[in-house]
Length: 224
Image 1 (cartoon, one colour):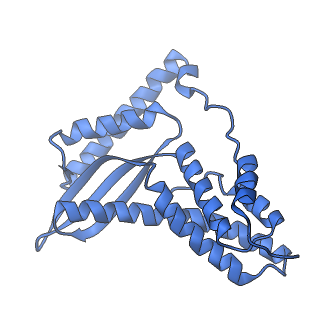
Image 2: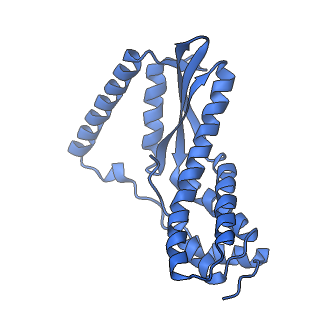
């Protein structure tokens, strides 16, 4: 099997065909009965109270906002409920000094962690393909994975929306800091698509392999 570099137009054509979006997500909440909606709200209230009790017990404070932590958390849950594609994603740093530095480190942590999860999801599937295709150059696969991870990191930054941040003092002028983001999985899938298109342009991957990779790179994966 020959391995040739893709021309940009070839890659875009393959990706456009492979990444057609499915129908719009169902409005799940609207399909619930009144009894079910009441039960869902009851569970949400329990979740909110449990989280606030945890924050108070562990001395977390709201960072970078004039709102109360209670309002910030309620707003966060409301954002999650707006779209079934909206998921919580957390960036954190265990030791930092100024709030501005803490905030930047938390964002960097979130981007790095998401890129690692995304590339890990792809890498496992690629390794399975490689076992069935012994002539695929390992060096090209390694190059692709590295490029894909870096490009995911760059692309997903545009779809992470900060919801709220919390901070607590650790002593010696150091803080522990967490930022809770809203990550829309549909938009994140498009970001991974763009990263894939760009990384394929930089590597030598045959058409069959590119098509196979494109089938699963947009699949969802565990964010934990």
